[in-house]
Length: 259
Image 1 (cartoon, helix red, strand yellow):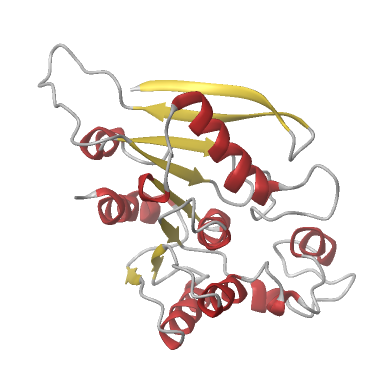
Image 2: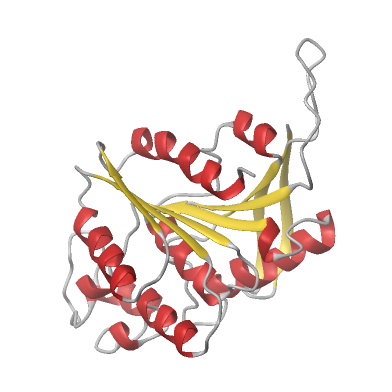
């Protein structure tokens, strides 16, 4: 498994930044050599709130299904384009980084070859990014996703919900009095794609039954059902932690890449 840490100048962030990457292009002499089946695909893997670029996909799955992993660091941005200069994280992941990987490694050349997944804030980011760029991402896996738009809508200056304050959410999501109708809301993007007659990416949502974000995930599932959007939705025992994500990422990867 080849591991890279790449530094480059991001025009979206107006500064040097980095991402990490895994490519399953080697084999052990003391083990059976398995020739890859078909072209290598690419998974963009998004971290959660307070996190950073890291891999939590078993490397054996990368070899089994022959896919590379690209891991950006996007601070606590919710993978949205903030209004301030140098905070275009949505464009950085969905446009700039995809183009960089295509140009430099010859990967992620089409939506059929490119998927995106994440947990918590990264689950929100994976679904939102795929809906923003369905021509670039064929499938999105959203694990224990922070679908918080309705929870922060109408929040006022000085308020704090115990996770972050009004000023933070305002910087990420924009006007909180209008956030439910804005493009920061994945539901708005679904409605726009449907109205345009555009194809939607494949969607896989899952959440633990003891997760504090269970109800927002159930609400997103209900919304997608009401809009007649094909998708996978699953619940299982677990909390908002790596034990649940480590178990379910295998199911997500199989859904994405099994032929």
